[in-house]
Amino acid sequence: MRRTRAVGHATLLGMLAWGAVSGIVMLGGSAATLVAGETPVVGFAQVMLAALMVLLWGSATVAGVAALCRQCRHGIGLAVWVTDHRVAAASRVVSAAARVGCPVIQVDDTTPFAFTFGVWRPRVVVSAGLVGAATFDELVAVLWHEDFHRRHRDPLRVLMVRTWSAVFFFVPLVRVLLQRLLDRQELRADRVAVRACGVAPVAGALFKATGAPEQATGTALAAMGDPALLAARVTQLETGRRPVSRTSMGSAAVLTSLPGLALIVGYGLLMLEVCMGLRSCCG
Image (cartoon, rainbow, N blue to C red):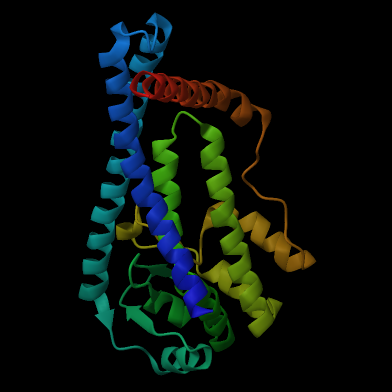
């Protein structure tokens, strides 16, 4: 199981690296197409399409790198904040952590929250406010939920989703599909906590862990109190079934994605034509 998870995490990292490298390769390919525009390999229409693709992939590469750097910068700031506000864990936190088998960091903050952060080494953080507000069973439920995020490296998933959504800003459908991945992980974490503790502790924890530190804004993390998915999570607790995703794949997302998809397909056909032309010239 550990080996399988390691392969999965390496695949996610590889996807991020591949996105950056492929953007550079596509830019270089479009530039080469422009340079070869006067040869029989490509015509005026192909050169114009290549020029458009240079602009498109240039913007996509800049957007993706900016999103990645922004999250890393916020993540470093959050790590410093956690270190500065870390306190000795209360006895009930130690007991709950031992029951779940999850290492926990307690921070001195009156806002009730719990989250998992850290792309390379995920760590679970709970606030003194949540420790004081939650019952012991609710605290255990919180740790089961966050331990799921820790074991599955969900902060890395968040980093991936935000980066790829920024890269493919011209295809809104990509953001919808990737957001569904995060929604599924959040609902799975709740189901794990329900199997371990029952519905009542998870429901209580869900309504008590409602905050987040200001330093968590823009950071790749998985938080217990994500308000965006609250209705779906409550529905799952009430019915025992996985609800319909809150991220709707509506007609608007599909229609606004069509121009971007057409550009990608056109670029792929252009590069295929260029490669076939170069092969015939060199062959």
